[in-house]
Length: 309
Image (tube, rainbow, N blue to C red; front, side, top):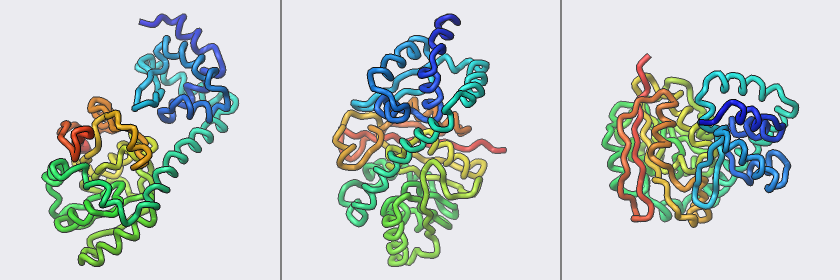
């Protein structure tokens, strides 16, 4: 248990307050904090230690990278309310927010550039959903007569499968070239009337609130700049009682996927995804680890249901 004096000692420094302000927006690595704050890595690391000791920040390892987020101390609602108010009033708040946004935009750009480059050949790199066994679990939910959003649709293989049964499928992707391929494929398959495309980020979906029966995140979440925000926005667009189906990778140590597939995250811990779903006001229906296309890359399968209003 951290005492109050230790907490206030940790807060008695402008750089530490700036760090807390930055990670309140998104999880950030040390390298990203260095970029945002414009400080040497040694300085940032030195100031992270007292914040960790005071449980104001906590670390999450993802492969060789370590990301920092708010720690257990923020379970105190009074502290959270005070910090949210005061941190935004410190000098340089707007500049730091802009720098964090630039870091997140750079994550998105790396992913977008990769998928623009491989548009037309992605199917040769990976199977929808990370393997047909995992995909079958997602399809088993049933989509007949529903409005479905395929988030991070890529070339639209899953979109086409679902469009055979659904009333409408909206394919959302940040790559214009991928979306053009989706439209072309839908027309060739006679599914043009059922398939719509929408360009946008997973964290800010170009979809109206409470307009979708089922949202699918099939091997897309690990490309998101801010995965937790992506889940929150997927929950926003769901109708009451609607479902979010996630097929992604369980946390792994295969660093090569960063370069080969432009993965932002090396999969996710099941408990972390559960926290994100519950935090987005979704009720857990299913959470499971499934064998994927290769033993080194097991698949995470999760289903959350939006609470009825």
